Length: 398
Ligand SMILES: Cc1cc2nc3c(=O)[nH]c(=O)nc-3n(C[C@H](O)[C@H](O)[C@H](O)COP(=O)(O)OP(=O)(O)OC[C@H]3O[C@@H](n4cnc5c(N)ncnc54)[C@H](O)[C@@H]3O)c2cc1C
View 1 (cartoon, rainbow, N blue to C red):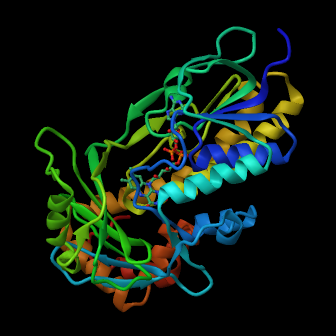
View 2 (cartoon, rainbow, N blue to C red):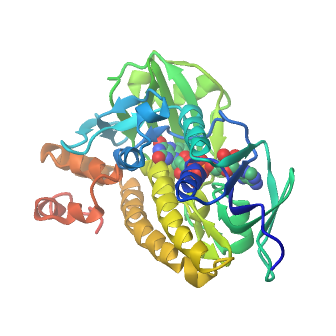
């Protein structure tokens, strides 16, 4: 093996997955370099809701709002609706805590700063365009700043990750690809401590507060040449107001951002000298807004495995990294299942409305948002209390 590489770990991407992996490893004494093509603060198309599960994970790492120096809006739950029907309140149950509404530019910048404070070297404005992990040597990144060699590469470069496309098998994972459009708005006539989500196959709309008087509006529609996309921020607000009448007085307060199609499957999240984390390790549609939780959870799991693997081999092999792969697959399974349930309900709006109404009346809709908020496990919905409901709205997917 050639001379000592520049870093123990090179992380591609400084979103939540990359920053938290880097921070974890630096705290354990490893030399970590993170490169990101963007300069922070940078924006990211997102509903900008950090769910209670993600907040709890960040707080457990000493990255609560105070420590990060941010001032998120406390989100106390959701209002869920099917198209054309009144919204059903679904506050997070007692003991679950709150989520955060926070602009991604603010959150991600704070996480990058926390990684720096932990000793990580962060190189902004540096794009990775090649990943060489073949051969017996150290993994090498080709970047706009020159080559970067490390004992291990963490691919945290998000949806359509370049690292994943080099080391893993990736494939589109959705029968119905979707695209999203997002804009900030002011003047929304909704309570400022919760989000509203209207679930509709043709146009799902989410609205949530992200700062005092400022809201994130995200609309997700089927992709394709005839996709019902808005051309201007005002058009997006008008289109979304058909689903959420409380948006009627709102005005757009920023540019329109589009992203998607999102859903992709990654079959090998580890390879010799490489692990993939966050969206780079696979993604499903943003309907349930769990991406940041998954990014932070995968970062923690990857860092645990990488820490051990780096002590065992100069360049960890697949077998050293296998514990992470198993943990990741286990953790992704319930989310995919839940996503499948939600997807099948979207095809049947009347059943969806019956299910939402029944759950709301039974007081168990809060338990559903505790699951989508990553605060309760999916199996908690299979308790007797919830199973009783199965026979009521016939067609509730099993
Ligand atoms: C429309 C929409 C709404 C969403 N809403 C929510 C929500 O409300 N709540 C939630 O929890 N999740 C939501 N998500 C999902 C969430 O945004 C992602 O899951 C989360 O950002 C994943 O974090 P990450 O660190 O893996 O990737 P990212 O945050 O995407 O970070 C990847 C980083 O890699 C960098 N990068 C990429 N390529 C390169 C390269 N070649 N060289 C160098 N750097 C590179 C990028 O600049 C970026 O900074 C939403 C997603 C979408 C699309």
